[in-house]
Each structure stands twice: as structure tokens, then as C-alpha cells.
Amino acid sequence: MIDINKKLKYGLNILFIAVVAYLTVRLLFNNRELSEIMCELHRADKLWLAFGCVCTFCFIAGESVIIKYMLWLFKEKVPFLRCLKYSFIGFFYSYITPSSSGGQPAQMVYMKKDGIYYGYSSLIMLVVAVVYKAVLVLLGLFFYIFYHGYVVDHVGDYMWLVYVGFFLNLAYIALLLIVCLKPLWSRKMAIKLINLLTRIHLLNAKNNERYIAKVTRIFDNYVKASKYISDNLGSLFTITWLTILQRLALFMLTWIVYRSYGLSGASFMEIVALQVMIGVAVEMLPLPGAAGITEACFIAFFTGVFSDELISPAILLNRGISFYAVIIIGGLVTLGTHLLNIKRYGKDTDKEKQQKELEEATVAQIPSSDETDK
Image (cartoon, rainbow, N blue to C red):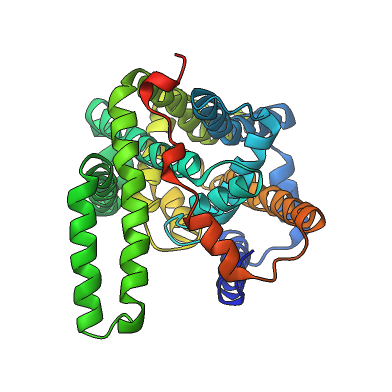
């Protein structure tokens, strides 16, 4: 399903994350014994941590609800557990690839294996990507405006990273919107870019027509996607609110860890504000899972919120629940799904055939607005 080069890249990314995790533990606890580390972690209230695990699951399941909702709009009856499978697979690949770039392509491949048209899955992933990032920016702007003093005081010298994060997220959203709202113009620009890269020999001239044909298929898909989205703004409103709830389910995890140690003084909104700023700052950085920089931002932003004694276990609990546990569970779900697909379809022996089937899944399957019951 995935070629050898991609498997190697994924393996190196996972190794990078594991090394960062090990170094984080050693640096945070200054080479103390494992028993001491476990003792500090054990001090946290287990009921609060269980609540944190539920919130993280709700974060994953929130995307599943959106996927199921959009498939329902297309009159595709897909069980919720299958949508949950797509979400775990997506977050697994997102967390092990730079800038979360691998999640949605993987989801589309596994959806195609389950008989969901590429036209459907590509539209769903496009909408999810735009709204997911847009909600982050909206939450970031809300907390930056209404909690400006608190944010600036605690973020301190890292404010430049937050500003860079706002810029990168807005640029990403703008690019997706241009592709979605102006697909014909975007296709024309993409073809010109391919021809330019071919002329300067960055792309193989022999494959020029194949590249153009592939781009044409993709942007033909976005032509219909553009019309469908403009005709279904009500569904976008629903998806936006679902995404806000999904995002908040994860952003509140730091407050849950804070309460698990019996701390008080910082409000729920203040802690969520700082966690949102971390999301703005790191999500678009080209590091697998934003590993390393996320921990550094946590220390910088939450110094003064958590005591010096508890900042280290707070980081481990937060990242352990929201990141490493998701990678482990998502990896197991992905492996199990892959093995079941091999059992069902046999081992992939013709990569080109599979890729062709994926790319040629017709965009005509995207229904127009009058074909869906609202």
C-alpha cells in the first residue's frame, strides 16, 4: 500500500519522535531515576486523567462525526466505527509526518479500499482541512484579542513564533480556498508551474503529459467541489461548530492536567488560551508531530502557571495522552486495518495499478446540491 521509500521516511520520522521523547524525559527530569519520575506522575488524580483520556478520544471521534456527517450528505451509509478507523489512521499519519501532511492522503487510500469514491473522500478531506485550520486561527485570534495581556505575559519572547504560526496557517487556508473557489485558475497556474519545472529539468520531461493529466483530474474534482460547497453553506456551518467542539476537547487537556494536581489560580479560559497559542505556533512547522518544539513552547508558555516542580510531569502527561497514546493506538488500528485488507484483497503487488485506480476514481461521483436530502 505504501512504497518502500515512504515506509523508510515514516520509520525515520517515528525514530525521530522516539528520540525526542527520550531526550525530553531525560532533560525534564535531569537524569533522575525512573522510579522518581513515576512517583511524580503518580501524584496526579487518576479520575482527572481518565477525563483527559475521554477528551482526547472525543477529539479523535469529533473528526469521525464530521466524516460520517458528510458521507451521509452523499447518501453513503458508513458505520461510525469505520469512520473512527479513518480518523485514527489519519491522526497516526499526521503525527508522524512533517506539517501533518500524510494524514489525509492515507485516509483517502483506506476509504477507497472500503469502496468510498475518491471524489467523495477528496471533497471531505478538503473541507475538513480548511475548517480545521480556520477554527484554529479563529480561536487563536479570539484568545489573542480577549486575553491579550495574559497571552503576551506568559508567551513572552516566543510571541514571534506565534506570529509566524498565524502567518503560515493563514497562508495554508488561503491556498486551499483559492484551489477550492478558483479551481480553473489554479489548474492553469499548476500546469504552468509543471511546464516551468520541466524546462529547468526539475521534473522529467518524459512524464510532463502524465503530470498535467494528473493535475487536470485533481482540479476537475475541485471544480465540482467548489460548486457543492457554495450550494451547501448550511452544512459548512454545522461542520464548523463540530470542529470547534473537537478542537476544544483537546485544548482543554492542559487544564485537566492542571486540575489533576489540585492547582488553582489560573482559569479554564486562560489555560486554554495558552494551549491554543501553542497550537498556532507549532502545527505548521515541518517537524513530525511538532516534536521537541511543542515541549519547548509548553515550558515557555506555562512557566508561572504550573509550579517548577510540576511543569515536567505536566508536559509528560499532556503529551503522553494527547500525542504518544494516539500514535500507539492509531498505529495499531492502521496495522490491523492493513492486515485485514491483505486478507480481503491479497497483498498489493501492482502499485501502479492501485495508484491508477485511486487517481481515476471519477469526480463525477460528487453529487450536486439537489441530489442530497438536507
